[in-house]
Amino acid sequence: MPTHQWILFVAAGVLLNLTPGPDVFFIIAHAARRGVRAGVVAALGISAGCCVHVLAAAVGVSALVAASATAFGVLKWLGAIYLVYVGVRMLIAGLGGSGSSGARGAADTQVALTTVFRRGFLTNVLNPKVALFFLAFVPQFIAPGSAHAPAMFLALGLLFTFNSTLVNTGWACAAAWAARRAGAMQRAMCWLDGVAGSLFIGFGVKLALTDAPARL
Image 1 (spheres, rainbow, N blue to C red):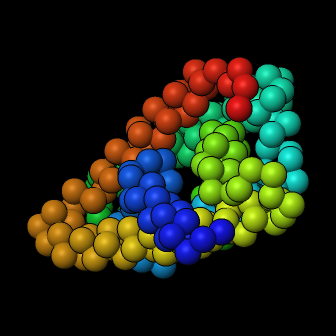
Image 2: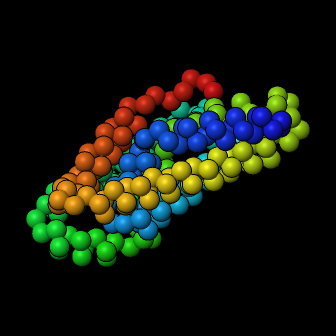
Image 3: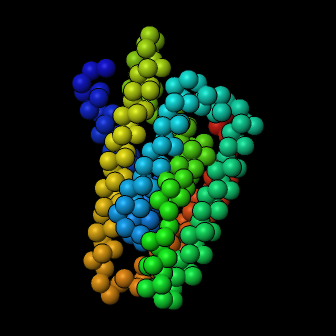
């Protein structure tokens, strides 16, 4: 692939990852409420989910999911249910933390980073729209009839995921930095989980209402 194509691919990927979506809101919520480490771990979990979609697309599994209404529907409903579940958990945590901010902060430190990673991974890997994104976006940068199309797809997909990890880490650092300097607004951060939870419930409902694509 020519150098300018690589540059275009990287630039497009960075711009796409700068656009707020479920992944970004998930990272910001954890980073602002629990610190930069939790935000970075959330970003790594999301990237791990992306790697699954990239590998599946490279071997053709994602294409089968996109072509099968049943497979798409099963994955869609699993993803929607999990998004709503995560949203409800965050909403309850946010509303329950409106009392003692000190007790809330102590409880937040007990949240296992493995749990944050797992939630980030599942919110991504159970979303069939991520698979469709890779199937629609990456092939535009692969020459038609290329003898090494699967390898190129894998390389570009992993490059996109690597770049998205850097961008998402930036989101985590920015959110944690803003939270530390909120001053009098620190008590209002108790509501951040509630707001993010409401958004995740909305994302889950939106995913549940998504129709399977007629064709790629």
